[in-house]
Image (cartoon, rainbow, N blue to C red; front, side, top):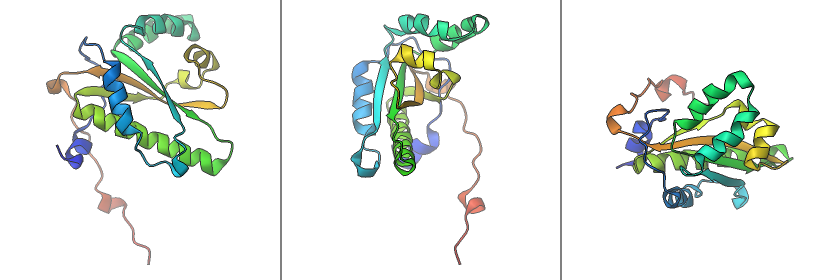
Length: 180
C-alpha cells in the first residue's frame, strides 16, 4: 500500500471495536517504527504507558474516582469501548523553543503510530480529554511533574466495512500563497 493511500484512507476509529485483545508485542513493534519521527537533537521526548486489554478494567476502576459521581457511568462506558489504551507522555522542557520542538516531534510520532496501526488493521483514535490535564488522573497514570500527556490513544481492531467515510478536505491550492 502506498504512503499516500494510507494517509488518505486512515480514519479515527472511535467505536465498534472487535473484542480481540491488542497484543503488547504489536504495540511495541509499531512504536519501534513510529519513533523514527523527526525530532530535534534526537531528544526523543516521549515515553509510553500501555493499558492492555487484560488490565483495562483495573485501570477504569482507578480512573473513575477522578470524575464527579454523575459523570462516572458515562466515563465507564467510554473507557470500556476500546480494547486497550496507549498514553503518550512528553517530558516538558522549560525553554519555549525546545518545548515546541518536542511537542511537534511527539505529535509526528503519534501520527506515524496511527498510520502504521492502520496498515496493520488496528484502529486508533487520538483523544485529548480533560483527564489529560487532571492532577488526580496524572497520579493514577504515573505522570510526573514536568511531564505532559500529548495523546490518550484508544486502540482496537475493527471491521473494515464499518470504517467511517472521509470528510471533505480543502485543496491545498485554496490555502497556498507564494512569496513575491
